[in-house]
Amino acid sequence: MDYIRAFLVGGTICLIGQILMEKTKLTSARILVIFVTAGVILGAVGVYKPIAEFGRAGASIPLTGFGYSLARGAIEEVQKNGIIGAFTGGIKAASAGMAAAVFFGYIMALIFKPRTKN
Amino acid sequence: MERSKEEEIKKDYLKMAEKVGPSSSFLKNCAAAFIVGGLICDVGQLVMNYFLSLGIPKDEVNSYVAAVMIFLGAFLTGIGVYDNIGKHAGAGSIVPITGFANSVVSPAMEFKREGYVFGVGAKMFVIAGPVLVYGISASIIVGLIYYFIR
Image: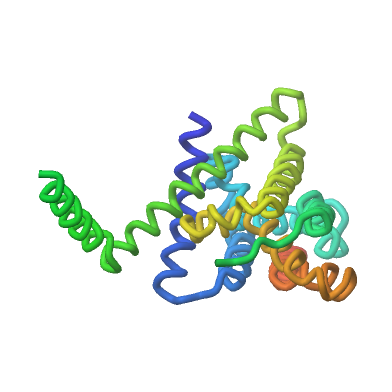
């Protein structure tokens, strides 16, 4: 059941991205920026929470989920620590992903050579 | 006998090629994005269930899953597999967090010859940089608004 929900929610979010790319010719970089920002906004207004509870990994793996955890982190940290939480909360909540991207990204780029594109 | 069969196959092939032409490529791409994106999320769900079974608390498990999926995305990009998936899957491989890892590793590898500081170190963030700028800034704005209106 977990897997069906994750598949449907994750697949649908990716489908939205594909439709955007086909209809607007947005580059992949812009898609990623739009999706992370959309995740922050949807998380802030409370729309993403039920999606995350229903889809679980299907909602947290797409980049909108990264935005959602940024927004949720900022809000929770403001509740705990006041205004400074707006600056610390988002990055704290998303820190594992960011650190992993920097570290593993760097290591993999060192180890492997680029394939020639054909 | 042999020849007529061959011609038949050719005809069938042409018919098929027509069908899969630009008119239906939109639907095909959408289906591919949906399926591949869904499958990547299922891998994420598998990883999540594994960590939950180890007793990792629910509110921390997302960090574990994100780190593992980013590792997988970065590794598959390194060995050249991820870009092959991406050729067919479009947004299905871009939108998941593995695609974020791919966007870090690809330019970093590509620009290695420009050195380890301005090549690898700087080009890693060609796409990831804007994502972080907009994501983090938006979350700070959300936090500030929440502080003032709560």
